Length: 195
Image (cartoon, rainbow, N blue to C red; front, side):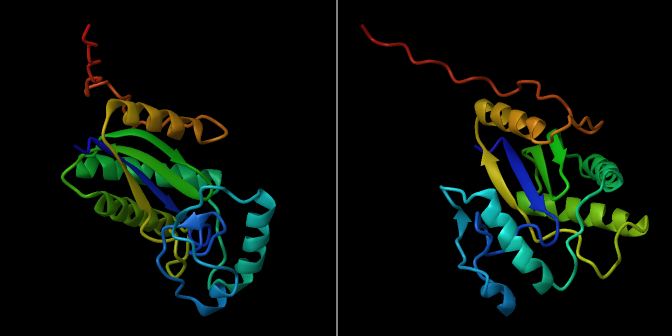
């Protein structure tokens, strides 16, 4: 039984299909980017050093159609406001949220909307707000694709993911739309050993 979902998405250009860390992409659509390296579907078990990732993006940046625009402090506030309004409108329950300069993490309780539909709505509403307030040009993509999801099945999954998201930013974030997990899912009973 799915009880919650960890939603993750990145800003435009910050996690390319052939990123040395691996990706959720099945193909590289831009020919010039294909020359930067092989596609590896899924996150690599052994992660490359930071130097290798920086070198990859130094080579990739001039090949992208648009510049990579990391989130400023003001952008993060705007995205948070938009996410809060979306969560209220769609009646999502959010247990954790981290809005980073280049990606977003959210922990959402199971809902009638499917995970990728939730991401689509949250991305659209936050993108629209950034454009409305003049923080992004209408022609510039804000988000770097449909994102991905990790389904959570147990109370331990929820608690572990909530802690991971809470500790993701270097400075603590506190958003009004985040509700503390209330432990509604019971812990599994320990099986008694037969003597």
